[in-house]
Amino acid sequence: MMRKQSWLLKSSLLGLFFLTAYLMPPPDKTPPSDSVIPELRTQCPPGFRKNEHNECVAINLYQQYDSPNNQGVGGLQTAPPPIRDGFSPQQIDLGRYLFFDPVLSVDGKLSCASCHQPEKGFSDGLATSIGHQGKKLKRSAPSLWNVAYLERLFWDGRATTQEEQIQTSLYSKEEMANTPENLLHTLNGIEAYQKMFRAAFPRKDYNDGIALDEIYTAIAAFQSSLVSLNSRYDRYAHGYHEALNQKEIEGLNVFRSFVARCAECHTPPLFTNQQFAVIGSPEPTGVPLDPGAQVPFHDKSLRGAFKVPTLRNIEKTAPYMHSGSFPSLHEAVEFYTKGRGHAVPEDETLYLHWHIWEPNLSGYEIDRLVDFLKTLTDEAFMPQVPKTLPSELISNALNSKDPGT
Ligand code: HEC
Ligand code: HEC
Image 1 (cartoon, helix red, strand yellow):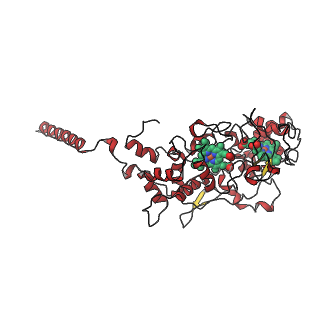
Image 2: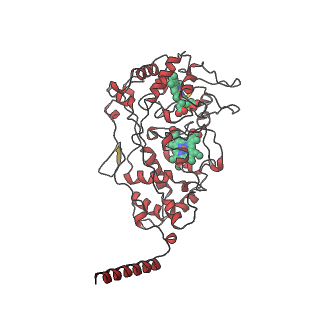
Image 3: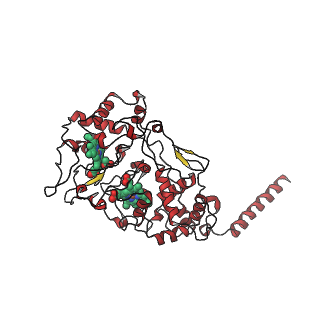
């Protein structure tokens, strides 16, 4: 009796299995169901507190100090400048998917993360980046840590807002080479993105689909969440003196000294004063001088000037300078002591900054500076790389792309 029952059970289960298999559409034609569309996070990333308007507000220990203007330049306990915050957790999370998704580029091959790789300090390890169709670009990819504090973007400062910078990255023929029309068309064709944008930008009328502004806001929200202010150096600055060893403290002292003058431009806590300076760093052999900020500012005195870059996570972003001319941190630091203007082409007269001079640093001091710069590494708020991308969900489901491309 028992045996017969179990046989019956088995065969009916088997029948059920074949019946379902028969009724189910083949898996590669299934559109993504709600369950596989990623749910956007409702919590703010670390370093942000959610207020009653569902906005993520930055919190860090530097906010306890006075305004940067009340303190001497290079002081350790100074407030950072205002940060771009106030995005919702959903917008930040949607931006994370967009940032890693190559679907943003015209041929689906480059994502923001191709050139701003998390494990390389959000740079790419190249002297100058490789853009659309393998084109070698003129400048190196800057780190994106603490970009939310910056008043001007790009090496030459030609963008004044993140939205402007994001459009340059998306639509420049040399970078992602997309067009606004094509980008909208692509994203609106992906059901997963439609749902995610609706969750991140709730509004009554969604008949006209995803809007360009929403794309820019989401990307700005994500890159604004990349905050790095919790390094060993920061613990030292807040008063925990054991955070740095003796050699690193020596390096910090050289960095702040009136001989080396590093902190005059690379001012804590961001390690940039956000100004433009001509330091006369070299171009790679055979490459003509990059006019830098002269072009957007229409100012001859800014010929060869670049935005003072942050030194946060600098250990991770070799090679260094706007065209990646120094492979190591040691070489980048040594540049400052090789003689004022030593690398300026002979046919150029540049207005070198007055803090660029002849500090005659010893080999020992250069080594200590490098030790100190490595204490600025902090990746505690490293975001997670998405496991699946909304564009892949749709392309895998429709089997329109070879797996692995
Ligand atoms: C092909 C490589 C490449 C891609 C793709 C790319 N970038 Fe960049 N990014 C660069 C380079 C190179 C620069 C510096 C350009 C310059 O200063 O002229 C830069 C500059 C920036 C800056 C300015 C940082 C600063 O300190 O001034 C930000 C922010 C940025 N990119 C974010 C993004 C985002 C977001 C995306 C995707 C929408 C993106 N990038 C796509 C290479 C790339
Ligand atoms: C007059 C302002 C100024 C002073 C002083 C100064 N720097 Fe710089 N620093 C800059 C600028 C501007 C750049 C970018 C130049 C370029 O790309 O060609 C830069 C670039 C760097 C870089 C490479 C950053 C990157 O992301 O590639 C390092 C490292 C650096 N500086 C360290 C130092 C150290 C150490 C000192 C002191 C010995 C110092 N700087 C003094 C303005 C300054």
